[in-house]
Image 1 (tube, rainbow, N blue to C red):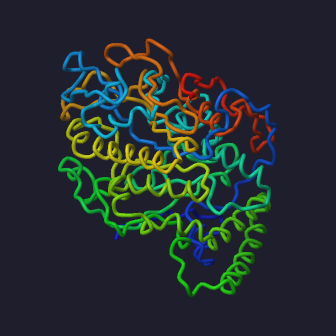
Image 2 (image 1 turned 90 degrees about the vertical axis):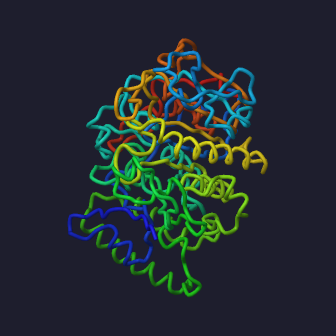
Image 3 (image 1 turned 30 degrees about the horizontal axis):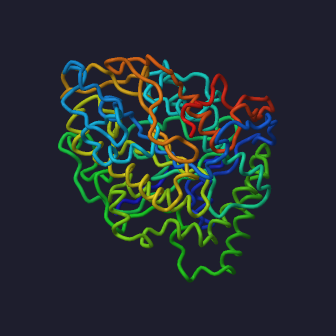
Length: 499
């Protein structure tokens, strides 16, 4: 069994957060105590009223960490020289003139359901997940490797959570507003620190996403090239067993013997520990702790959440539609969480084992694209779109598939022919929730090196998501020091994307 759990976080008195949670038998990954000076209020700008504002009731956010090549996905250049176009061909899609890579045959059939932006560009060719998913004005390597740095802005899901909490007051949702699959981001790599991105930023740690854990078995061995470089013999992104699933600690596995009397006794014990915690850290606001306590017990008693994680309720055909892989089943679980009331669900295609895996194809680019990456993306993304549309959910569910950057137009020499980091031009796919169908926004040059039409920044993508989710990108938030902070500075809604 592959049981993915997070690392311990130790308090100043020597007790770990996991100790506290395990004493109360909560085991909720991602649910820590609120940080100092949690945000108290926000001065919101008047909400926009432009087209499709707030049409999306939920968002499924698919992040391909490491960054796929624009040339081998949604912006192929078949007429470019071989050292540019590589060894893969392009095929026609359901949208005239919109060709895609030949290893995306399922996606080719559903491109009439999506909008592709082929002109996304920014100046930071590094794994800046924070730059791609927050309003942070700039990013560099030290910030990327310092998730709790003072300068970080909140993750987009954290902002959605902040807005939803302001609406709900003390009422707790049955499904977290901001939930991450398949595990806490960047937690399953060996020998490296966590990377910045999906955290509460200046809103405080109480707005970090709630992270799931994966419990299951991988069914396929890693490719030969990966097996030589990583510690794992089996690769869950290549295949998982039908019994594999996701859960929030004990929330998804409560037995029938857990009565509410026992739950209340656990609550009383937890309250005693929290009183001690307050005494040890007088700077921690009780409201943040109270929020997590209320959320924890609400989730423990939520049949809706447990059912959302129960993939046995899906037919074998539906599970196969998404693909029996880690990413495929995470996307399927994301759809189930949205049905249960989830507002912002993130599914990362994360590195597993060693840095340089996933979509970071500096080496053996084409073998990895053929063997694992493109077939997995093709099945999962097309399956999600078909399933949402067939259920009548796509028009109210925003789907976004993006990454930190693209990859170099010119293939590198050696290492089996890889592509390195390239942020000057890459592609992002959006669908549903007020997004136009069958549209191409922007255009790159002849080698997919630079935009030549409708340059779009990652901040513009985020502003568009906020707009579709009913949040004015001009909203002002308040940081932990009480300073007003612009939610999405230097950005604009990409109106070309809107239906």
